[in-house]
Image 1 (cartoon, rainbow over the protein chains, first blue to last red):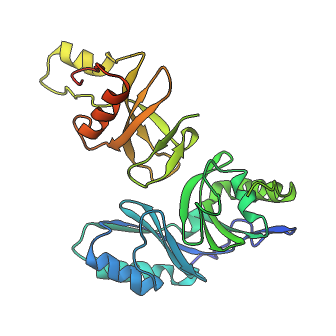
Image 2 (image 1 turned 45 degrees about the horizontal axis):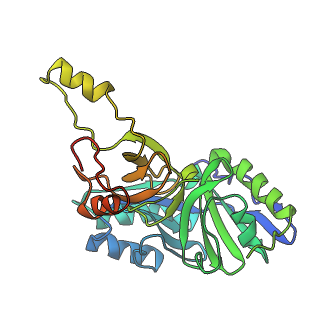
Length: 187
Length: 109
């Protein structure tokens, strides 16, 4: 097997808010009927979390699951376990209408961590990021600058961001510039 | 700025999160239809000043289509609803009637 390399190989832009390329992350696009009992149980066994409600995500370390659309989940697993996880899904969902695809190497994963990380994201996305509207556990697919991206919070000061690999450098530079420009003091 | 509520993912999406996909409730005329019907299906579009029904795609979000009823003159949004419908739900029609009594659009009123 070829040697997998993450987009920016762990590049870091340190500052009051630190932007960090998150390295290799196993990601599986999992589509199907989200109310299907087999889908629910395989999601739970792979990630430790059940199928999230609309617009929500749950993660713990490298494992997690996010609600992408009414018929799509994003399954997060350690990068080395991705193919095994897909095999587990295919076994569990045999005979059902579903799709499970390894998209790990098609994506870039970034973390934004610091006191005003909320504002670093809010400056770039047309999303309501007020602390009352967007909390830990919420998941949003939207736009960061000129590119499609998705993000969620793992704690009050940390955002996890994913985007397509081809625009990973742009996303990193954009977030780093937003962090460097400092807080707005809006929230 | 136009913000529309996506009924598929519950997000109040900014216009830049969306892609306009043209007129809603088009009836397709395909093989075996008359040339006139096909011509109208292909090219004839409403261009009202006032109440209008449109198809939108939440392209940066969930990637799903939905339909929206809004006023082209004021940008007022009357509501959004599932794309899997042949005509606007009664609640949407009522919301429009409350604001624009006597409205009509295509076969709807």
